[in-house]
Image 1 (spheres, rainbow, N blue to C red):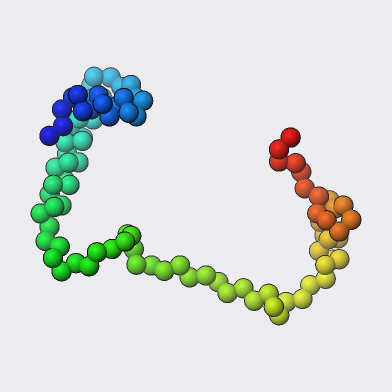
Image 2 (tube, rainbow, N blue to C red):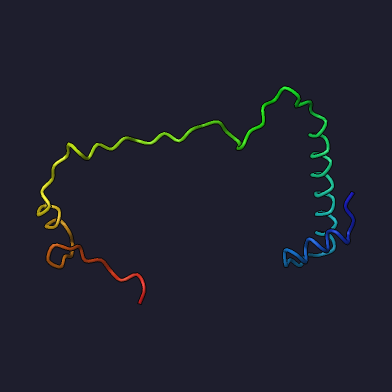
Length: 95
């Protein structure tokens, strides 16, 4: 299925260096993964609808109702730890 030259190629692509023992273990793991994938191809999927993702869940968003809310802008600005006039003052992110 997968020989040591293919494992070496994968390691080169991944820029990894591992011991010979780890290579042998990796080669064995890859063989087992490929056997499992082959086993999955035996499953009858004739009456199964194709999916575009792993779930049929739909995102549900909370409906925020800001139209009926009133607040005093001055109270909000007064609550800020630092301010410059009617603006919030925040620490620099980039110097």
